[in-house]
Image (tube, rainbow over all chains, first blue to last red):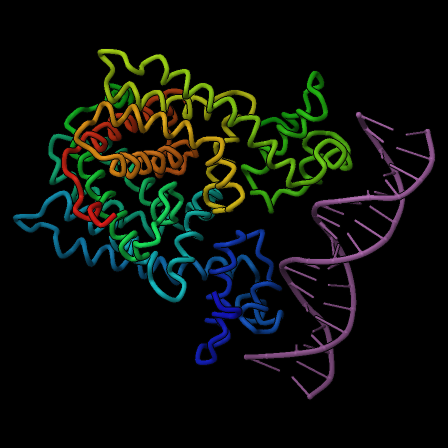
Length: 220
Length: 220
DNA sequence: GTCTATAGACTGATAGAC
DNA sequence: GTCTATCAGTCTATAGAC
């Protein structure tokens, strides 16, 4: 990492702050990264954050919105391409759900940092943030659930959501590169993520397809 | 939650600090929870943390050690009971891996808070902490991998680790209760976690058992 | 072992010059 | 829109009385 990768002079002050904040929130967390660190990395004045965003909390919100809007759109576009088609497989739908997320994590210019910010957000367990995510992603999840239900007619709606939730957990973990599996020196970052996506999609497909239905689900 | 649940008078100052720290780190993160908040919740003096633990970082370490030693032991005990037996199924081994973790998350007296601390630790991506976890858990993971390899002779060692990593991701997510699935009012906390464990074990079993081997794995 | 008091550094936010 | 200077508050850590 170079000393000030977010200070590229063709970007605006606002964008530089967003980029620097994303990287520092990923590394140190929301509480752990100070506005002084952010503005120093962005090579802007300390007062610029409050001028452009109003407060630290508003800055955090903007960091999320910028990436989530894009991921949102890309997932639905991918789903639209396979939905309703005759030969659509479970793997196709899982691919539409998983791959844009893992692609984002290898995007140049901050995407890789953002997925770690997102993982932190889940860990934060913040109610305000959960509501924000649910409001912005709720309809995406519902569209995917509908398509899964069509492909897996043996499973009830509730069972579909349980399984989709497990997939999301494994995906979040994989995106943020939490895993114990260390990339080997002769494997590129890109190939490593590709391998992770393949493993995840196959694993998820097998789990989703499992015909067994838990008796515990009956209690709901 | 009562106003000062960790100030019970039959516990020592040290234990009260650990309990309060666990709860506050879960809610606000390591950087977000101050020693003033911790000592206030524990109803001890501010200086007591530095007297008993030396520093905030050492306190964080102790919060981890206390719970991980127990989880470690319980997983290996559970694995020992099913390992090598004639009728042992994949589900039995997964149960030994998953259930102690989810049990911990419903333990009275702080276990539920700790799993959120653990999830935060993963999100922190801290190298020191990763080494700490790897040193303390590496051998546990290896023992489980060996047993999975015995039950799944069609899969290579590397494939086993990829899949175990996915299971760990879904488990971490489920433990910390990140999921979008909200517990319904007529379902107890205990039943909800039981349902989550059942779903997770079945899903993981199907994923682990999948005979398909990724072509991407060949690049390793 | 527990307390008060405080050092010394850092925080987010803002007022006001340019 | 960007700057300096600063306020008012917080933080960890420690010295020293009891």
